[in-house]
Length: 227
Image (tube, rainbow, N blue to C red; front, side):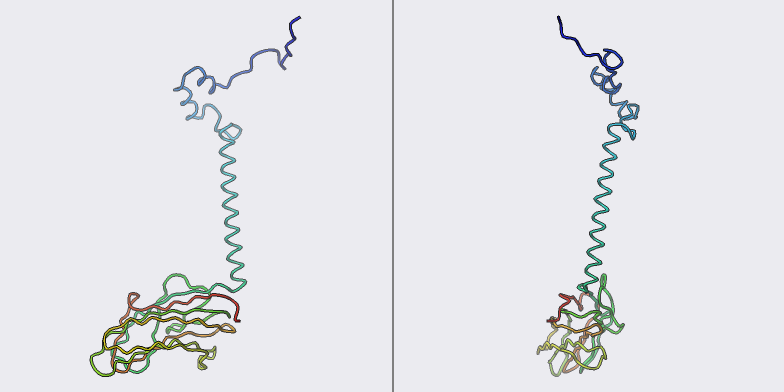
């Protein structure tokens, strides 16, 4: 006796074939593309196959974007909480012309974002938190016409009262020609409010050109620790 074939629900009729798949199986590729592109297949609907796939991809991309945004926000908040962020850059747009003796360089033009420090408007940088800081500068000094050729630049850090010197580093050169002076200093401050300034001294009349291509001051916080 031949084996009995289980009866399908609704009888032993062949299941209906999706029209889109049927057009492909019948070799009618043009009709297949037309149905797929125009949406006649229903595959792109919310309940359709491709619609479901696209929905999952969109949800996944949205979730990843949300996760990265949360990570970025958490990182920024954590760094600000720890007080480890601090950086800034400026240059002087006013030349020092025919000067002698000691003059403070007024780095008054900001370059890019500034975080954790600020400029007092006359070229001194206020540090907004305690910690280990680094300051770098570059200054071009034009050739002298006559007289002494001594040049020195002092990088000074003042206490919040703005009159008591906290620390200082001097760069010294003797050259009658035009020179580019560069130096850096690392130091710690025990609290917010300390001010950084650069002071240029010439033994006789000199000029300091203006502009970002001739001078610059860069401040960077390394750590929140002081020892």
